[in-house]
Each structure stands twice: as structure tokens, then as C-alpha cells.
Image (cartoon, rainbow, N blue to C red; front, side):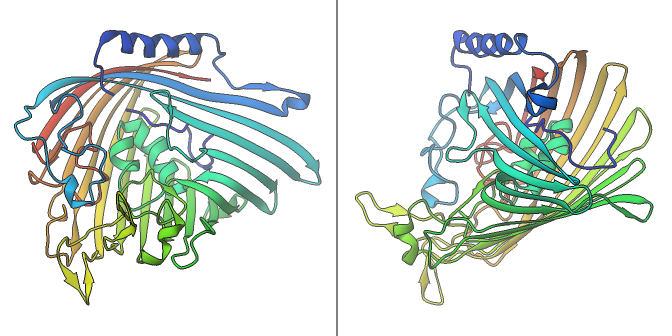
Length: 453
């Protein structure tokens, strides 16, 4: 499933739910087609000198996948986070089957810009994403910020935005290869930022190429006085000729511990009343991605990612009834460490991605591969650190023009072990609902339609 971010590419140097019943799918598809048919195949600009703009995309896919659990999935407690031990259990005797799933996505950008003179420009952006007609990340707006830029001094952006470690992993890298969920939706990073301050340099001439430097800071929630949140990210882009390289490093303290690269960063727990019972935690991710235009028809890409988690012990953060646990990570349930019950252990892992695309007239063919690696940790209990996953995809996209694209795709996932999924994955069934606790492999194929405006 594509999770493409259709906003303009900021980097210089680059050339460019299950279907329970048919009526639900018909309703999804009809809504998307009706919406797309009413819109032009390009961004809408209006107002004095094109001051305001609207653009976005909508897509719908249908996927057939094997080795899946029907209805609510394989997990006995479907709404429980995988890091909690009571989420490990699967439904006894549930048989695997081939399932049809439907997916819709829509994203809208509203922009405003004003030339202040003297090389200064003011820009505002408002954006939101909906998946299956629900807000993608409840409590977060995808983008709501104001930016002041100067052709010589760079750009200062303040407000809600997305991290670079997610944005560039998702689009164009992951989306172009059918690997958005497997690559951008895993690992130790965060996506959504509520209170970001970002400085982006102007394009610098370095070693006969173009370079951009950027730093982002977010202090998260002010309501947590003991476990204060803090987010810091660096991004460097270098483009020369047909080569584009992006290096990103994200370091955080006291966000909600997770292995979900599309998570929101704001606070370590949903209620500051639990602040005194939480243990501090942190995580970081280093990501290097490269795209090389080998020829006008062939594009090659590769990436490596290093994840690091401090771990977070499990504790009742709020008394009940019912008692509310914190968000633990890599816990030795029932154990102790230095007098701490249910301790969380540090962990590290390394992931890789490769891809290739071939353009032929209006067709683009692609193949991609993601390896989610085993984790290194001292945790004496198994929480998925011994497992790994290999995901491979192939796809074909036809560009009809006027913003319309049709696609066909297929993929497979293979786990090293049957058991808890790799620690770098947010759930045991992250990859196309193939649950590693009940099967070591799964395959899928599907078709989709997308409209960009």
C-alpha cells in the first residue's frame, strides 16, 4: 500500500480493513472516484499572484493475501500493544485463510505564501491525512506550520510537521517500491511533531553538488515535569548529477517508547498524572538513503538504518479500576534488575532496504526488498529480538495522465522464526497482516488506483 507524501519534493538534485462485504468496498471506491473526478489534475492556485494553493492525492487498493486470520486477526487481545505480555496470546484454533482487504487514503494540503520583499517570503501550510475515512494519527495534524524563508539565509519553520526520517523513508523511497509500511512504518523513529522548530539552510554549493543542512527540535508536552520529552533531528542532503543522498539522525527522550516509525512524538504517557511512576526512556535512529539514476530508464536505490532503544520498564502508571500500565518496551516480565521489577532492557538493531525501478513509456516497473534485522539486547526473555523479517515486493504502475495512475503489485514476507515478530516492528502482524506467531511466511497481490492533484 502506498503511503506517499505528495507534497513537493524538498530535495534538490533529484530528477524527479478488511472487506467484510462488497457494499463497503463499493462505497469506498465510489467516494474516491467521485472526489477525484471533481478535481483538476494539478494544484489549484488562487488569490492575488497565486497566494493560496490546494493540492493532494487520493488512492484506493484491494489486496488478496494468504496466511491471515479472519475477522479481528490472530491476537487474543486485538487492541493491546505488543510490548505487553498479555498481548502475546493468539486465538486458540483459529485457522489461517486467504483474505481480501480494502484500503483508502486521502491527503489534502492547503498553502498560503506572501512575498515580504527583500528576499523574504512567508508561507503557511495546513495538511491532514485520512485512512479508511479516519484521521491517520488521532490527536495530530499532519502539518500546521508557518515558515519564514530568505534566499540567502534559509528557512525557519515553526509548528506541527513531520520528521525527515519518516518523510523521506516514505516518499519517494518506500512508496515508489511498495515498501512504505515495511520501511517507513518500522524502526525507532517518530513521525508527527506538534511543537517543532526547524531551520533549513539554503542550497549550498559543495563538491560540485548541492547540499542542504537542517536541524529540528521539539520539546513535546510541558505537562511532564519529571520525564520531560525532547526531540532532536538532523538532516543532510547531497545531490550531484544523477545521485541523491540523504542522511538523517533522530535522537529523542521520553516519547512513547515504540518501534513504529510513523508514531507521534509528544509525551511518555497519555496522562501527566502518571509522571512520577514512569521511568525515563529514549530512542534514536540513524538513516542513510541513496537514489541513483543509472540511466533515463533505470533507477537504483539503497538504504541502511540503525535503531537504538533504551528500553522502558513496565509499571502501573495510574491506579484503577482498571489499572493503567505505562508504555513499556523490551521488558523482562516477571524479572528484576537492580531492584526494579519488570525491567526494560536496551536494544539495537540494523535494517536494510534495496530497490530498482524501470521506466518504459507510461509504465514503471519496480521491485524492492526490506530486511528487518535481529536485535542485540541483554534481555533474558524472548521479546522478538531473535527474529528477523525479509519483505520483497514487485509492482507495475501505468500513468494515464491528468493525475491518474493505476497499479498492480505483489509481495511476500518471510520471518526467520515462528514467534514474536522482530523487535523493530510495531506489531506481530505489521506486514500485510501476516502474523509471525502463527506462520513464518505470507504472500499477497493486489490492484490500486491513485489520483494526484
